[in-house]
Length: 433
Ligand code: ASP
Image (tube, rainbow, N blue to C red; front, top):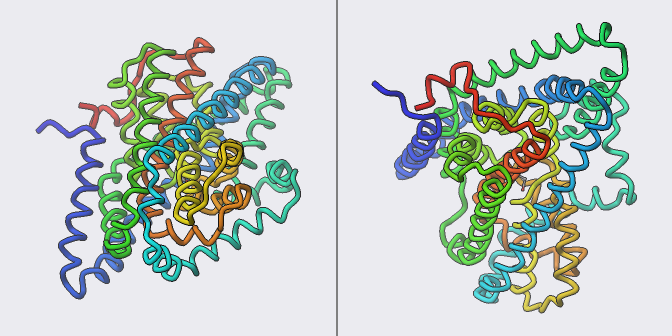
């Protein structure tokens, strides 16, 4: 029998997960059964992916930087990467602002619903606010200080410190470029081999992806809040989703325009990573698969993927910034505030910075939203309004975050002459058709 392509397998796993959860939810024991016997497999799957993230970044970035051979190509690529990331993020926030101003989802919220939501989710909103306060209390340069770890083992022990690991890997790679080749060769060969092993491990983990996402989605369905609240927030959710869909369209156009690769080619290559981003709500957990897909299926050379993607997963969050813009204006509308043009332009700046500062884990975008709200003078209690639908929107915005990283890596690769043909290797052949 011909095997289904991986993205179909994952999609099937997702649909079955939702259906099984809806079915079991009809029984009194259903939710407990899913929590005790199905959810753990989802957790194991995510853990396995996260387990790979730090060694993958270390191995691939060290190899990627040292392959560049000289510091000037490194800084050229670095500059191009960061500037493209910032440009796409500003486009994303602008799209978000445009959609939310046209749809005006906040005006559909009645005062009763608003009070009900604030009552139901006020406590949760307070927790997010406290987390954000901790970040705000720090001085203006704290973000910079946080990039430089004082202990690499300590930094590698927490996936939230990805930027610190990236810093160490780039620094190490620079050191490797600067020493004589005879001395650097064994070190490079070691990381080369190490990298191959990690890629093989990802292949093995991905064989379990359909089952993993089945478990993840089943658990999400039984843990979801009541449907009534979803309905009240329907227009807001629709606005975020329209914005995110437009952003995907922007990527397809950019990739097409810059690299002449068709949308079909791009989507076929990246779709398993997108589905995984949707199921895990974490760009960091998806990173190993994003790297494999972009390199092997989109034809971006390793020197580019290993540099552009880990950095993108941590700082380039277009979906998150778009969502922050929509959420901020939605909350303002729900509280009957009229935001001036100046305030909305301010949102472009803060949402861009806040998305750079968001960790690549579930729900991080909402914590940083507090800062966007505070800056624009929008009541932070408004977080309670959007809490009920945050998880599904987190899933959608993570898809955009990951797609954006892939699109930018293709554009950077093209500009550096490092975009080749796809070269599927390993066990991919099993699920390629
Ligand atoms: N979950 C998102 C990510 O990992 C971040 C966020 O918007 O919450 O990309």
